Amino acid sequence: MPPQPAIPAKRTLPQKEAKLFKELLQLYEAKQHKKAIKAADQILKKFPEHGGSWCTLHAS
Image 1 (cartoon, rainbow, N blue to C red):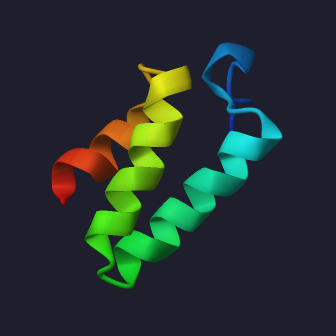
Image 2 (image 1 turned 180 degrees about the horizontal axis):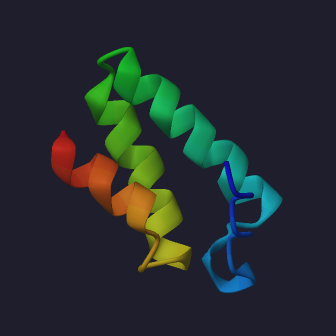
């Protein structure tokens, strides 16, 4: 299997938002959608094009 390409720097989140995104995923999986939406909104305020947050927000 070929190695995975590195994620471009402009698409990675800073440490604080990356931690918040992990929490967002855990909240979503635990069906705590209102809290997950709040976390997604926090990320999208600073990074409006973050795809993972958009996907989670629209899947709720």
